[in-house]
Length: 296
Image (cartoon, rainbow, N blue to C red; front, top):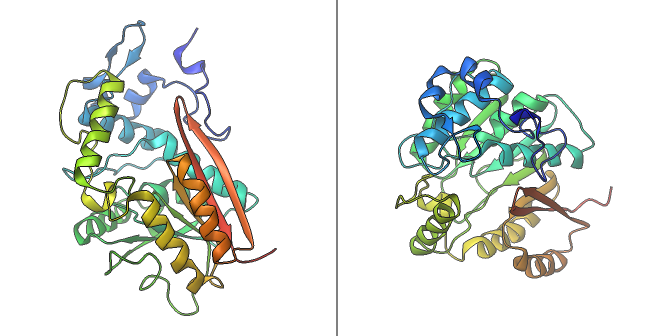
């Protein structure tokens, strides 16, 4: 059986990466990937997913093949995201707004990061226009340069610097400005130590022996005061001030046990609609929490 004919469990049916990778084809698009491809224990082409340079090379090849994005990279020490899972979030958001396409659909990405991955995928896949908000000035500058280098999406993505780490929307959404969607991949952890342990656990699951944050990540990307729960609760509270300017607010929730407290917070602010959208990538489970103050 061809390795690229096997469907990956749980991914959205429109996900361009929902079959196993055709490495010869990917190498044709991005020859630099060849240095990292080798046979795995099952005799299939693969890479070492515990090796950050290999993951980055794979991401570059995937983005070139799927979207023609020729210039994608992350600076040393910053988060290198898995492309299939990021793509899934975008496809589920498209379902949420009934598959609307084009630049009239405006999306706000909270914490876009140096990788700017959600705007790059969303602009390429659906033609949406994006504002990417980022609290780290260096990450914001890197994302701006990368967007400018990809002419197919350069006119659809704007990066804005968030001057307050305590705020999501304030200082980013301007008076009279409307968004159809907001999205966010919040920091999961409440401390550097907790983030480091999470990375070590990921490495053990991959069979890796390396130490450190192999996939990268700065403080604002991986941890914050109160961790995921605290971050999202603050986001929910702040969203009330922008209820008339955003159709749907959404965020990833990695820990299912957080949902009851988050749903309670949404009842407290009188959200008119609340949805939980389950996602999966192999054994990894996650979910999107979406809320709106509109009953329509």
